[in-house]
Length: 134
Image 1 (spheres, rainbow, N blue to C red):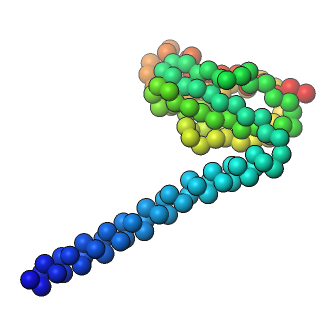
Image 2 (image 1 turned 30 degrees about the vertical axis):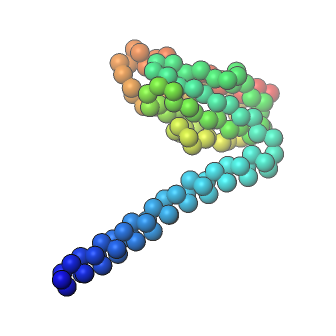
């Protein structure tokens, strides 16, 4: 009988520890979302959503930004698992985690899928252009 009581006590302790660990993991995304909302309300932010399907990116609007603008880019994976990156702009975008930056350098930049999701020639369509104008 003592063994059964000890087993129940250990189970309760493990359950409590597991619940505590989960609370910390849930708090981080909420805090991150609040930080994103605060940044967006701090000034005018141009926001874009890029939708990814297998072998294609599309945007809700053309990615043309004026120099000095604050930018927020969202990625939605409708099909497959994709990411977007551009080393020059410091973008390393994953679905459900927006990328934010200030457009500082005039030019045309290529945002591309940084997750190889098939044959290389098929992956060539996983690019979208971002223009920063004066």
